[in-house]
Amino acid sequence: MNLLQTAALTLKIGEKTILKDIDFSITKGEIVGLMGPNGAGKSTLLKALAGLSNAHSGQVLIDDHPLHTLGRQVLAQKLAYLPQGHDVHWSMSVENLVMLGRLPHLKPWQRPSEKDWLIVRTILKKCDVSQFAQRGIQSLSGGERARVLLARALAVQPQILLADEPLAGLDPGHQLEIMSYLQQQANAGVAVIIVIHDLNLAKRFCHRVVLLGRQRVLDQGPVDDVMIADKIARCFSIQVVTGNIEQIPVVIPVESLGFNNAE
Image 1 (tube, rainbow, N blue to C red):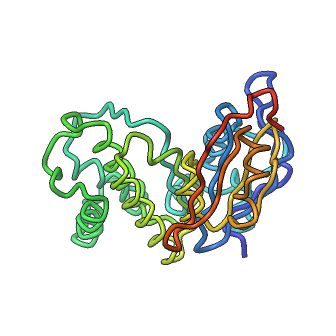
Image 2 (image 1 turned 90 degrees about the horizontal axis):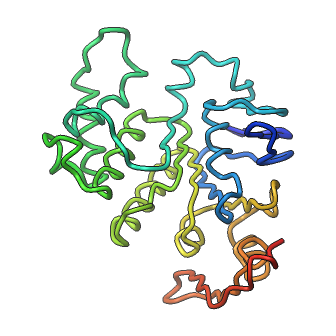
């Protein structure tokens, strides 16, 4: 059963069509990568999936229910959205910021239980930010804040995680650690939709990939079927070499084909 799916979803900003007739789905335990060149509509699509913007036509379904029919608290418990960027406008400790992820599970004015604090402490450790627990969020670097904000999203313990470029600003080691942790989440049953630019990490960690471009889905399917040279060339207008190094898949961009050649 699909946890989330779109049906003929068309998204506009003003009079401009961003995406048209988008159909895709995700099931329990999958990582689906949304990929495409800048301006392809990846972030716009993710916002629509999170219920933060309205579709011009078509719909988003969660557990076969139209997204707009779900109450806010129910939606907040089922789905966590990690937006692009690492700006934080609140002055609070890292620990308290991550605790905000538990709010959908609390009644108004209810104090967090020991179970809630245990969840927060576990996720702080998993995201490698437990050492910052008592520090103010504003004192952290951009990469450190990125990991804290991911921890806040994961504290929801959602069925569906929508992450918009969660690896941006992270060093290679933390990129690998975060993708490994998202993989653990998927193995535990979470459906993860991630906007990702790194071809190698997408090839290695995603189960399926959706390639966006020219206001539509250019291709989608299992990662090994989609992340191949000719399809990558159509989407990104680049020539790549694909292969394996010690059984780890790699995708190496070698030449731009010019933006005018993109599909």
